[in-house]
Length: 202
Image 1 (tube, helix red, strand yellow):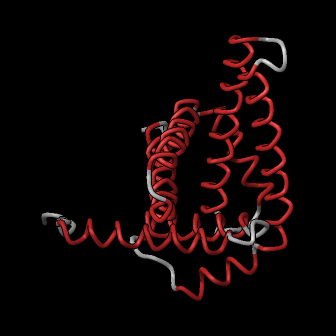
Image 2 (cartoon, helix red, strand yellow; image 1 turned 120 degrees about the vertical axis):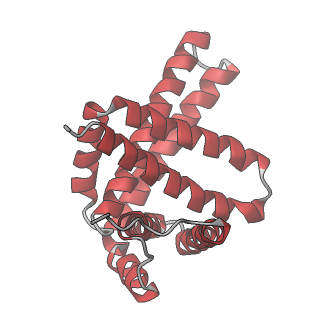
Image 3 (cartoon, helix red, strand yellow; image 1 turned 180 degrees about the vertical axis):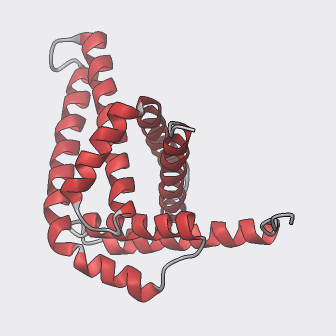
């Protein structure tokens, strides 16, 4: 008996997925507007994208809303740590780029490399929190660290995706930024999933 082939996707499926990801991006940005809720918004959006990639369908809005509310207490300290790290790294890069501190181009390149690596790691933490249903930041951080060690190519790819997103952020109009956020999140999940499958023993 010949196994049944999955239905072939056409342009309408692609448009539907693109629209759904744009909506996820807008929901992510709206949920993160108070700033301190950014961690919870990222966790809920990442979990929704994971469900779509894994199960083939989006979770109900009630489920996503419940994940968001449930993730608020743990998401606030995560957001504060991420903001502090971003401010410190940004200040270091700015000081090196303007010559206010010694080191010159070599120190700037090293700091930029460290920043890219940390951003890629943080992106994989967001992927892992999505795989866990939006809960467990500490576990997600440890899982992301193991993934970086086991699959450095995936780590580099995550850093590259974030770098491209940063460049596009400076080029697109502000109203398109939420759409870019949704697409970036989907790209991170897709790359992490592909890399994980690629290293599984046959």
